[in-house]
Image 1 (tube, chains in turn red, blue):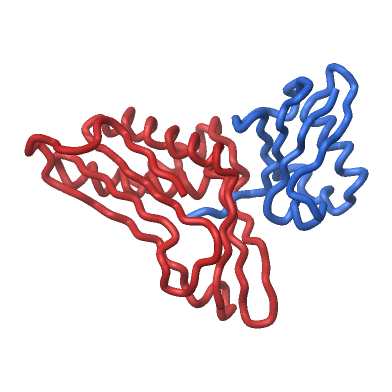
Image 2: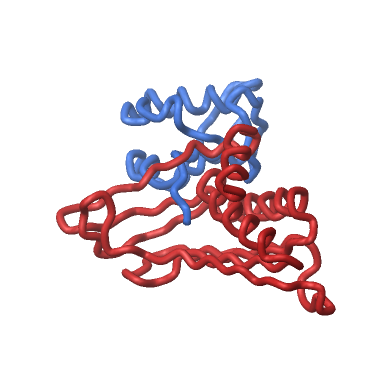
Length: 147
Length: 81
């Protein structure tokens, strides 16, 4: 569905020493249920702005890191990728931290929902109340990223 | 004045529509839109404290005053990733 970049994309002139990727997959189980497939939906224009915001936060916290992000929507089968995040930076610590931060923030503030179809029914998964100005949520994402 | 309401995920299922139009008095806030919908759709009540809202695809607080032609969105807790 969408992508965002922090800083300049493309060639780095050899300055980067690390690329970290995170690929989120559709799992065949969740809280004891056998999952058959997922359906994702998004409020796309706001989701794109949320991704851009996350890229901006990463730029503030890890200025040398650059991030790309893509989230799929629609029906996804078991084992398929739902989200891909790539971060590159001069040193691996920043790339790992920024990548983890990005997925934590997506789960906090991106207006995207998954509906889980499992053996015996289906349910909308409801996680965080999205509030991009919640400083505590942002701090928690940073804490997890840098743990 | 008239606004478009966008609903997502379970809110959309409860209302049976992804998009609604509603007439409002001048000076109405996002919260007023929500309360009007909550009387139409009693199952919205459980979301009173957990929804987020947006106007014209930007996050906005419930006390934000809406204008004619605005797109008001109500977002249940998110679950991307």
